[in-house]
Image 1: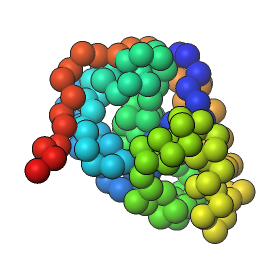
Image 2: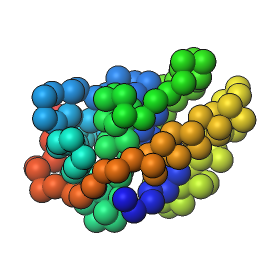
Image 3: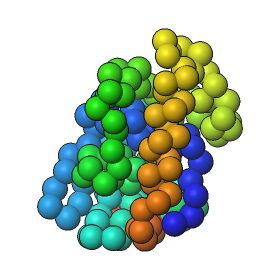
Length: 152
């Protein structure tokens, strides 16, 4: 699996914290942080595909796939770290990433300056990232049509 930016773990944790993942038998629907799009993550035992830009164009696990792996329990959030999820609620990563011109590290620094336990959060993200990189999983993009929210 191609290594994604660490920022994708932060975004996945926000999707978990906001409960923006709807699981089905062979796929999941993951709503974006600004609620404007819904991505489709298809999965089988060791293969995952998603129609988010990171996965589709960069060929690494974007945050929708990482969030689904966490929901499925293939990546574990330690029980004593689950309280940290509240720090990830209601973070509009799309807005942050756009503001920082997709310089993910700058968006992460901004986010970390708003939380109460920066060290624990960084440790949790590294644990999740390490678990992700140890998975024997194939990742690819899929061409499922994006679900976009009407802008009425």
